[in-house]
Length: 179
Image 1 (cartoon, one colour):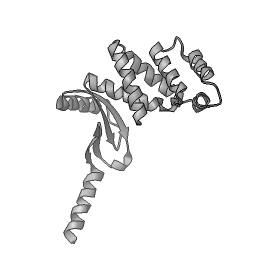
Image 2 (spheres, rainbow, N blue to C red):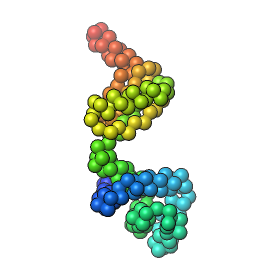
Image 3 (cartoon, one colour):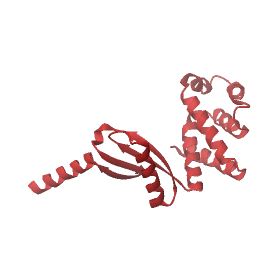
Image 4 (cartoon, one colour):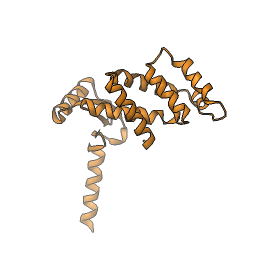
C-alpha cells in the first residue's frame, strides 16, 4: 500500500467515522473497488490523461450517482482528478485497516490442506476470539502443499502448525546433527 493510498483512505475513514457512516462507506467503497477491478477497460478509460478531467469525472457521476453515498462518489472523482484512480484498492485497504482498528477487529486467514468444515471453522473462530479478545474476520484458504495441519495468519503474524513446517523443522534438525 502506498503512502498516497494510506493518506487518502485514512482521510476518507476520518470523515465517514465523524459522520457515523463508517460501516456504510466501507461496504460501498469495497463494492466499487471490486467493480472497477473487474472492468479494466473502464478503469483504463478513466485514467487516460488526454481525456479532460471533467469528462472522466462526468463518467463516474453517470455510473455511480444515486448508487453510492456522495462521499464515495466524490472520493472517486477526487482520485480521478488527481490521476490516482488506480490507488483506489489501496485506499479501500487503508480504510478497512482503520475501520478494523476502530472496531476491535482482527483479520485472520486459516490455511489448510483440505477445506475446513463449517463446524471446524466455527470452533476456530470462537477460539481465536476468546484468545485475542477481539472480533475475528476469519477467511479460510486451501493449499494442498501444507500437507496437513493449519497455518494461521493474523494481521501479519504467522502461526504455522502445518505438517510441511514440522517436516522442514525435522529436516533442519537432522542436517544440523550430521554436521
